Image (cartoon, rainbow, N blue to C red):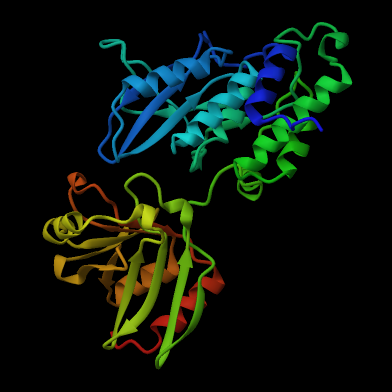
Length: 373
C-alpha cells in the first residue's frame, strides 16, 4: 500500500502543478517583505506585497533574525495575493509560530523608510486570505477587506477561458489540499464551498457575519454564559480559549457573590499559560486596580488596587475583582472591556471583552442576585 501524502508533500506537488495566482488591486505591489513595528502590548510584523514561492523562506529568515519574546505578535497582512503554495506554506508557518493575523496596512514613513506606527484599512486577497487563516487569532477590523476566489494556474491573465482550465487530477489535488488546510486552521468546511463559487477573475468579499459564522475570524468576546448552583447561590461563567495568546492569560471569566458583594474571577485555563511565582508577586506589587469600559459609550467604572486580589490555583493565576452596582450594570448592559492595570514589564495580561446577549444578561443576573450592593 502506498503511503498517504503529507501536507508538505502536497505543497511541493502543487508548487509544480500550479502557477501564480494573480495579485489583485494593491497598487505598486512588490514581493512580500516583513518588518517589525514595536508596540506596548502587541508587536506587529508588517507583511506587505505579493506572495511568491520564495515568501515562506523569506519569512523563515525573518523569524530567525528578529528577536521574539513573550509578547503578543500579530502578522499584519496587506496583499493582493500571489502564489497559492506560498500562501499555504506561509499560513502554516504562522500557525506553527503561534502568531495572530490581522488585515491592516502600515504606510511607510517617508522620513525613515520604515512602516509608521499608525495603521489604516488594509486588504488581503486570494493567496493572502489563505495565509491569513494561519493566525491563532484572526481579526479583520471594520473597513478591512478579505477576499477569496477559485484558484487556477492562469496567473493574472484571463484573456481566454482556456487559460483557467486545469486537468481534473490537478484540480482534485488542489481542492483536497486547500480544504484540508482550511479545516486544520479551524475554519468551517463551508468556506471552501463558498470560495469555489467565485471564478478566478472574480472576488468574494465575505460580510462580517459570514466571517464570524465560517470562523474565518476568531471570537474576540466572552459570551454564551452558563450558570450552575454553587453553595447557596449561583455562579455564571464563560470560556474563550482564543483570548489566551502571547501575554494574555485569561481563558475563563466567572461571576458570583461573596460576602454580599459582586465579583468577577479572571482565570487561566491551561498550564501552558500559567505564570511563575515571582511573576505573580510582581503582579500583586505593581497592579493598580482595574477598570470596566462600556465600549462605544464613553462610560466606565474605575477601581483601586484594593479591589483586586491575585492568587494561584494549581499553578494557574487568578485575578479576583470586586465590583459595585455601576460595574454590574456596565457588564450586563454593554459590550465591555475589563482590564487589570499594571505595567507591561510584568509579562502577563489580565483582560477580556464581553458582548452580552439576553441569555447572558439573565445568567449574570442569576449570579449577582444575592449580592448586597
